[in-house]
Image (cartoon, each protein chain N blue to C red):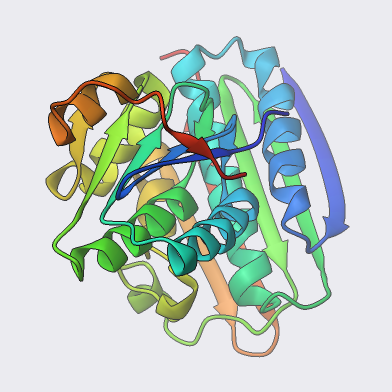
Length: 139
Length: 125
């Protein structure tokens, strides 16, 4: 089975909940268990929050989400056209954050890495950031 | 969707969290908690998760922020009513090393105050 969907929405914290619910609903076609649904909701929430806080620095912008179901896998891509990440490797270190004053725990990427089977982050300063994740459902 | 509720009992602030603790709600909880802590001397914060169905790393950051605040007064942070979904996030983040865990608010208050009468809890928000 193959199925795809795309979503574009404003960079607003109100949309964090909207985005994760959409992704989780889309994934139900794979018959995920409750834990797998929680995983999808958490990683989408983390990635979208990153776009809002870091990518667009709480300012205006559009966030793009693409989900694809292929075989028994869900692929999730979340993209922003924000400021980008200067050092992706450093950003992915657990507890590292550039915004401690906003009480960021620095655990976003660590959660995405732990909860998904694969995580790829592409970023270019001044251009934006793309986060690609995939996970096999119903193992 | 259910929102947070706040109660103050002596030096203890009890936060009954709503259904979701993400960046959006965490920002609000931080503001509301700061407002209460400006008016009252708060040494202990109880986060009750009984109603929580979703939390991400923004919730962890918010709890750690409150932990740092009460640590200044040699206080503590307590979590209660934790269920599977939240338990996983708390475990992954290592937050259990910092906070105390009780099954419910009554037990947490019982451990803090042995008197056993919480009837004069005042609702603040």
